Length: 559
Image (tube, rainbow, N blue to C red):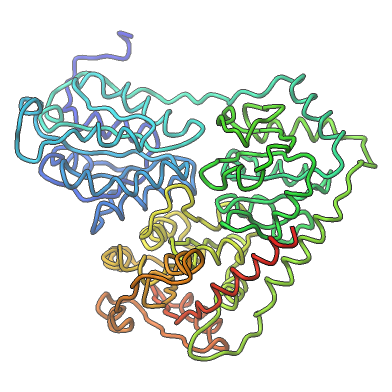
């Protein structure tokens, strides 16, 4: 290794930044403090990494998450020690459970005082361990290249997630002669051909196979391979919330989404199936007890990692490795088969039934408040195939999951593992940095939007071309919906709201209040044509929530 060393000494924080540059890190979002001052000054000299100052560390973490989900590469989110670090943790946990690569960078007090009671000192690494793939505190400047190389590799490895690195203030000042390690990528392994052949034989014995596609289907070219496989077989694809767009919404084999607490049309296809092929499936989205309660389904598990052990999820065959590669192998084995033995009639009935519901309120003309179905119908018309919608968490998320569908993967981002509110606004800011020419739409409830409302200033400072669509109901609508469904009553969940147009004006945003269904599409188009960030607020008719519950109940009864 002597050829990689020389006698030139550099400051540890300078080496840290150089290692991040070598890894291709483009953005770090965050709020700095005293304990990472050396790192910040080193970062200020970087020609390759842009630091985005945010108004809260949670917003920084959500921005880094969205960058990771859209690019497959980690960005950094930064906080200082103590409260700065703890403010990051919700967004970090959200990214980790949503499989987004991320580097979590925190400062820390000097190592000379970590062993005792001291101002703002806490075990930050211990706090992050449950919500990251790896958490480490640097104790020697010479180890920085190895730690950063390992951190980026772990964050990108399937399944992707967050990695935490702590840099104490005295370590940042140390000198070292080490240099960055050049990244070397590796190819994901593929399952043995004989295992793929076993899965193929099981498929050919099935009469009513169906595919349940999860988060892993929107990474690593899997979407393209899945579409080819479905064109060959006609087998229907049901996606989880985070797998939206893995197949085109207009494809005849698109059976839309699954994941609501109650069974939906797509569950009819799952119940009818004699073989379920799960692709990149994460239990955090839709537990198998909800679709295999009798434990009688034949299951082929295809994913980057072996199946989680669960009584209701016990696959006969596990295809472990690159999902796109294994789909390619199955497609190859299908060549020459022109008359496949499948009966997919129930799947087509399911698709037809769902299409009717998606089009039901497309021409609604109500005033005063707007139905969720109408809002999303207009949104879909305004958004192009590669435009990006980001959903916050709340009652609107359920409607987006059911009624907004995609032409391409990674064009609808929904938090569905940790499910944190406050995601959409900061996430949209990051999406606009990556795709400045696309329409970026954040949809949030009035509760979730105000949780990170301070990032409106960040959006204006960056002149982010985003539109935020707030569904106003003056309360925590999803909690009310669930309480009403279970207890036939709800606790007090109402709150007041600001004057939305004054709020937009105070942050120098464009602002719109739309109360008529017929005016919504034009309002959205106008907002997207404005320069910089724009706020659109609609009073939402959540009287539709219990009506959807009743409708799903009738589907359950038929099943």
